[in-house]
Amino acid sequence: VPPSITPPGWGLHPSVADAMGSRHFPARTVLFEKESNGVTYRVPALLYLPCVAKLLAFAEERLSADDAHANLLVLRRGAVYGSYVEWEDMRVLETATLRDHRSMNPCPLYDEFTGTLFLFFITVLGRTPEAYQIVTGQNVTRLCYITSADQGLSWSTATDLTQQVIGGAIKDWATFALGPGHGIQLRSGRLLVPAYSYHIDCKECFGQLCKTTPHSFTFYSDDHGRGWRFGEFIPNLQTGECQLVSVDEEDGSNVLYCNARSSLGFRVQALSTDDGAVFHGGQLVQRLVEPPHGCHGSVIGFPAPFVYLPTVATGSHHKPAKPKEGCLAPEHLSRASSVTLVREDPVVTSSPAPFFQAPTWVLYSHPTSSMSRVNMGVHLSTFPRDVESWTEPWVIYEGPSAYSDLAYMELPYSETSISGGPTIAFACLYENGTRSPYEQISFSMFTLYDVLQNIPLTATARRWDRGPPRLGKRGRRNCLVS
Image (cartoon, one colour):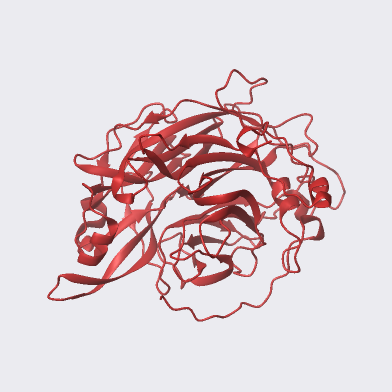
């Protein structure tokens, strides 16, 4: 059955797939599709709101695939019913605009303390290309956001933060952009928006031409979005589009992890020990390849499943608590125009030892080829601060594919769950097509069990039931921009 009409959740059991030499692909639902008049949907962003069981899928609506033809931002909301998602029709976010500007790079962010949903984005004057700003240093990009207090049903008018937040520093930025994709909130309440800027290093030809380098950084707020600041650039390697994960470790420590696009043939990662204000030097991640000029990728963090953690010595098994009141767990699926299904996850089995902090694992999505934007895959790291910790990819879509965004989900508690607790699952929103990556934006869901079963067996990336990979020495390679 072709992927576009595969019954949701159906697929070969991993052992059967291995025996037959075939591959398992998750079910796929097309949420945005190129129209006959050339209108194209690009740059997906995905956010999951667990306490209302809603998925928000954002994208740019463009007059063509060209960056300069970006126009408006659009949204589809999905209601999660157990392992199904029912999608509403697409809506244009009419307030996410500035006059005479085009809207780009959606970056949704949810404040769990206040219930405020933010959608950050940039606007660019007219049809001015990014390349023109980079060469001339004439920055015509603005930093904006809108908010919603009802999970994306209605939205505020746009707020332009450019002068208030960036101020005079913008004279040194040829241009800048956000994410794209989701932002995050830390336990402290700090809100973080991933971003990058082309910093003007020097001007030549009597100030008419600029030499610039791209650097990733964060915008952050410690007062629930009333005031914003920006942090320092990743200092050494050139980095661009990026995403963030708050990483807990077993000893109780925490670091902020940034995974960024680069033109060096590999991804770059950098760590911050002060919640994103300052990053240490970036490192090349040679297990995560980039195509020429790079491509956007997504990272999402989640607590390691209990089966991998020290367990209580008595051998007793404690039933996990049911979800908090207010979270939706409907018993049935109503009529839906689009439906996606995932299988149960038998990985989580036992309770962690007292006073033990579950370490953060990280899932990463990106095209898996070093030659072109093809074959969307996901990699897993059980110790993300180590650049050698990434597994080989599980390819979830074969064919042209490009930008993506991930969301982490705990599917509702089920009395019949094999694990006796919630299912660890992920959602991926990604660009794909048959001839070009920019024909569709598709949505897939899959469990952690699916990921662990479908990661290829290699000497350095072993299957989940053989334990996490050992940590090797960091490889070294000198890379130059061509």
